[in-house]
Every structure is written in structure tokens, then in C-alpha cells.
Image 1 (tube, helix red, strand yellow):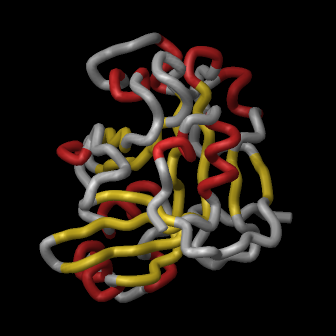
Image 2 (cartoon, helix red, strand yellow; image 1 turned 120 degrees about the horizontal axis):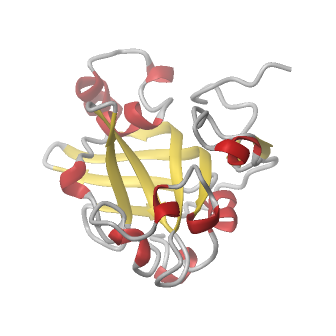
Length: 196
């Protein structure tokens, strides 16, 4: 069942937890792609130095200042796209980075998109996930109740959600230590394994 708009109208921390176990879906010319979200990170707008929106509204971040439930897709390192889901009410620019997912359907096409046969490497990182799903900056601001990109609830239940610091935000001063990464700890599809 496709998630309703109201699902996204909460803060980024709540949405990060709520998205764990849900299914990211993309309709392409080559068929339907589906993957279970197993790792997210919250970015909390103006008070979060790791968040793009911490410096206010720009052309790049304007979608985050709209009502939640849209894709925020941007380029990193000049070559990889990252998929975020906007959260909260209008003018509160929270979002959730989808860090990794477990492929479910359309796996053959995902392998082709990523040029790999390694199932555990298909969507195990934000850039990899966007490649697997053929998501680019052209998909930025897509409403998640569209017929080409959406998130659904298939009834899957998550037994335990683990929490840690976010990944690769060394520039973010005190925000480096905020425990705003959420994940299914036993999953083999995580972007980064946490050493015990």
C-alpha cells in the first residue's frame, strides 16, 4: 500500500525511524524496481550543521521548505546522486537520507544499472542506491505519490532498529556526534558495518 501524504508530515527523526522496513518503489521503462529501506539518516534543517538547509533556503534546497513527501536528490563528489525524503510541514526543512536498501524486485535491471552481479552491493550506499534505481537530479522534487516514484508499506515488521552517529559528516562540528542514523543491525545490505 502506497504511503499517504500524512505519513511524511512529522519531523525528520520520526520519519527516519518510520521509513525503516518500508519499500522504495520506482517504475521505469524497464520495469518496476523495489527495495526495502534498511538504513536512514535524519537531517534536521536549521539547527543541524550537517544539513544542507542549515544555511537557509536556496535554489538547491527549496524543495525541503515545501510540505514533506517529496524526493530531494542532489549530486555529491560531482558524480553520485543521493536520495532524501522531505519531512515535516512547509517551511520546516527536515529530511531523511536513504542510505541503503535490500533489493526485492527488478534485481536484474538493478544489476545492469550498477554493472555488478553482487546482490549485497547493489543498494548498500546512497550513491549505489540511486544508480540501481536510475535516480538522477532530474527526479528532484518528485512527489512521492507519483506513479514513477513512491514508498509503500507491505506489512513487514522490524524487530529492532539500531542507532548510531551519521556517516561521513566530518565538517559538521558538534553535529558529528548526533545519534541520527537508524538501521536494521542484522542486515547484510548496510552501507557501513558498525564494529562492536
